[in-house]
Length: 456
Image 1: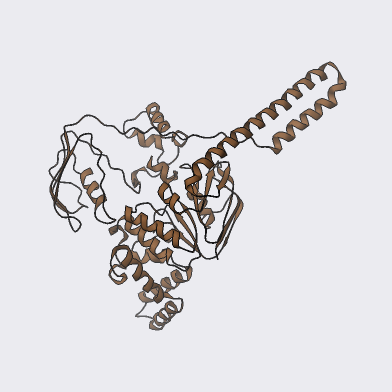
Image 2: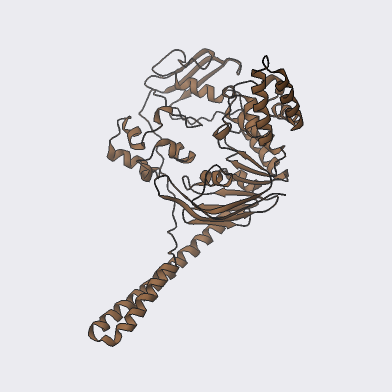
C-alpha cells in the first residue's frame, strides 16, 4: 500500500518572497499522478518538500509506504554519486546505503581489523546486499547490456544522460519501494526508452508521482493531473487527454469568480462612500457608516480575489548572421568506440535532427561540431576522441546548448550580468529576458532558476 496526502503546503524563498501556497492534493494507492505547471512555479521544490529534503513554510505532507526518489539529474542531491555502484546505492533503501558505507570503511581498514571486515560482510548479507546486487545486475543488463560486475566502478560521466536515467528507472521500478517520486523521468531518454517507460508506468502497482513536460507520456500514463500555481493547486481527476478542456473550464470559472469578487467589493465600497457622504450631513448616519465599513473590511479579510489567468507567451528567436552555403562538413568522421566512419554535409538554413539510441554518441557529435569553429580542419575538443574531419563552413560561429545546462562560469551570477558578457546592454538584455518570460528573474543567480528557466 502507498499513498500521499499534501495539505495547505507553502514555500518561501530565502529572501522571503512566496513561491507558492495552499497546495493540496491526494495520491491514492496505485495511482499515477502528474504534477504540471509553468517553469519556475515550484514543481521541483514541491517534490523536495514531499520527500523531506526541505521544510515547508506551512502545511503538511503525509506519506504512507516506503519512498523511492529519482531527481531530475540522477546521482545528485544528498547522495552524490560518481560511479554506477554509487548511483544504484543512492536510490536504494537507507539500510543498504548504511551497510555499504560500513563495508567500504571496513575494507579500507582490513589490515588492521579483519574481524570488523567480516562483520561488515555479514551485515551486508543480512540487510539484503547480495540480493540487491543480483537485482542491479539485471538492471545494468537491461539498461545497457553489461553485467553489474563489469560496470560497477565505471564513472557516471562515461554514461550518457539517457543511460543514467534508464538505469535509475530500472532499479526503482523493480525495487521494494511502494511509493515513487520521479522528477522528469523521461528527460534524456531516446524514443524506444520513452515507450518502455510508458509501458512500465502503466504496468507497475506502485504509487507514482512524477513531473513531466512530455505530453505523450502524460497522456499515456497519468491517471490524475495536479496543476501547481503560485496561488495554490487544482486537480483534474481524468487523463491528460481531457486536461485541456478541464483547464479551459477552470480558467473560465476563475474569471467568473474574480468578476463576482470585483462587483461585490465595488458595491460595498460605493455603499461606504454613500454613507460617508450622508454622515457628513447628519450624525444619524454615523452608525450606518461604521457598519458599512465593517462589512467591507470583513469581506476583504475573508475573501481572496482570484488571481489573473496567466497566459504563457515565449517568443523564441533563433537566428544568426548569413554565412557561406555550407555550414557543416564531415569527412570519414568516426567517434572512437561509438560510430563507424561517415560523411555529412549540411547547408545553411537546414534544420537537422540527430537521432539514435542512448549512448551511441549524439552529444559527443554535437560537442565535436561546437569545437570545430574558425575553419579548423579537425575538431578541437580533446574530450571527444575521433578520427577523420569535422569542420564548419566559412564564417560559421557555433553555439552549443547543453542538455544539463552545465555552465560553471555562470554560477553565482545574475542573468543580466551573464548577458552583459555577450556585449548585451541592460535595455536590450531586459528585452531578451522579457521574450522568454524571465524578466522577473533578471537579478536572480543562474543556479536559483528552475531547470526549465535555465533552458530558456
